[in-house]
Length: 327
Image 1 (cartoon, rainbow, N blue to C red):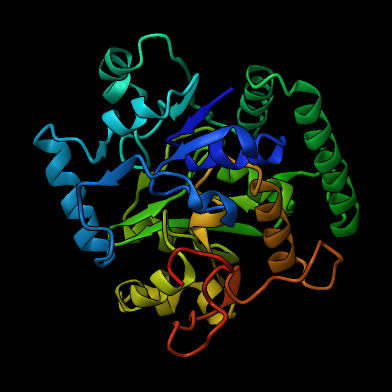
Image 2: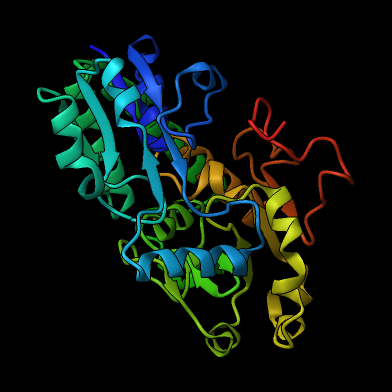
């Protein structure tokens, strides 16, 4: 089988299930694991991705309102790779190339290609979709084994932090997960499930609900025990560059989490925004932040999670993911 993946999460699942050799092309955002970076790149963003959060938001909104695509797909190059299977998504027009954008054109260039589209809402949906992908790849046994092993790891983590399935959410530390800093947005979809498995209770959202824009008054009223900052598509270096836009708001210093130094910044791009296998690591990172004395997996690296104000690349050499294309 020859696979072209236009979705980073799908690429990661293929590799996790032992299908690396079947990959023949990738999107420009498929940056993990490092060995996939040598594959031909088939997509490019049509909006600036190096600007600050507000500028990126405005650029995206302008293109969406004008009915323009956020991504270009090199269909001619894709056709020369002769894929049997193309992996994409039908969930978010902003995050990656969507099925609706390319389906008709793709079939004109590669008439007999099979399409696999991901559209999970909850963490259970993510795992169900991964198993379906494993079957499509004829790697069902590898997929089931991978997920079974990591589910056992979750059970061990739950024991370590003292959280059970029947634990009442309201008894857990309350958390607000900030998915975009300007304008302010909270993370939805599978993120509340990730927080719950890590021993927290996500406020201002529900499992499976879309991420949404909130007012600062809503955040202040929720006043969570803990704040998680995990901007979509951002490393910690990106978040550090946008930190002042978040923390300069008058409500910021009044928040209980800020006053208690319980603000944690994560690599959202690697661990929270993608419905891929690294969500298991995201759960460990959440648990470590909420229960620092528990044994909850390998300690967080500086590029994975920081507490308080994130340091920039110029301030520390270890804040970029190893093997990242930014290095």
